[in-house]
Image 1 (cartoon, rainbow, N blue to C red):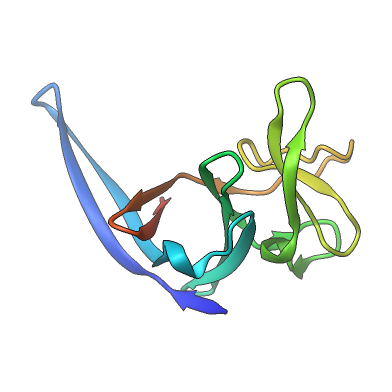
Image 2: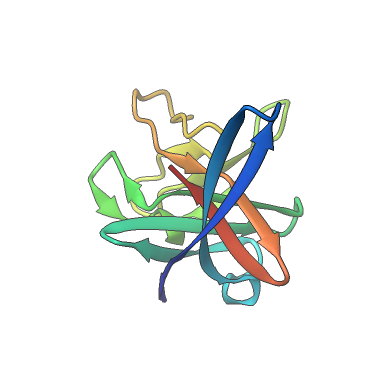
Length: 131
């Protein structure tokens, strides 16, 4: 399932001198994302994988492109945790390269990196922060 974003801008006044604008995109409804799974959403030409890590009560978003073989597949990958800190990760469904859902770092020992995005849920809607 592919979704299209809409922009939502939020402005914050910091120290009465600096205004920072955050751009949050509506990605989908929370019910559209399977528990402990992911979906792909599209903004312009960019595909973003959104994950509902229900076992942890957390949401994550990354690029959908696996850098290993340049395939748009990460939204279909398996999510889990690794290491002493139980770092959340996604495994590419084709070649099992694993990536941190927090930092985007490849956890399989390779030099690959994926882009990650902040996610928030508001009134049953999933928003992703973009630059």
